[in-house]
Image (spheres, rainbow, N blue to C red):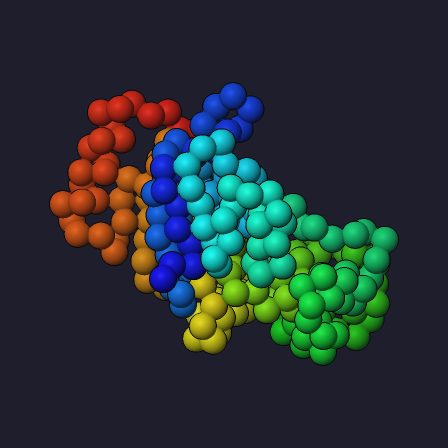
Length: 238
């Protein structure tokens, strides 16, 4: 059984294929690093798995939800947690109100929201400050807390260390380890390869919207995939 299963998945960014026939399987409890150049398709892949970007063609199943169906794409959003470039926070609401809102949207109790804020160091007066008045680093911590509070079955992390100090970065690493120890699955896109590899044993290289190397695959298979991508001349887009 796979938590994530994509077959010949194509997703468009405008008229261009951000995913260009991508195949991928991710098992329950895995932590997987997505690596590759800017424009390789890593962010699009995460957003497809989050149910936010539709497929143009191909098949995608996430947590037993068929993402070729709009109703299933909407349903899977309750089960995943996406940390991306956008905060998904409401500036006029406090840190507590934002985190509680996203916890309740996932059907989780308020205690989870409170513990997530504490875990991310958002306590005391910070808890009751409007997010719009916070520094970029504080806002990033609240954004991560809102995902942690949801207790997602699948964590989708796009450059999760961005904007954090050393303490915040270490906290994110520990959160990922705790999540996988608890049975959750994690996919993380990062350019900080040394740090990311320490928490994600499996590395997948994405280029031109395709998987061209996978540390979990036999060496010959990975090499063949890379050769096919090189010969086909697929551009790095999306």
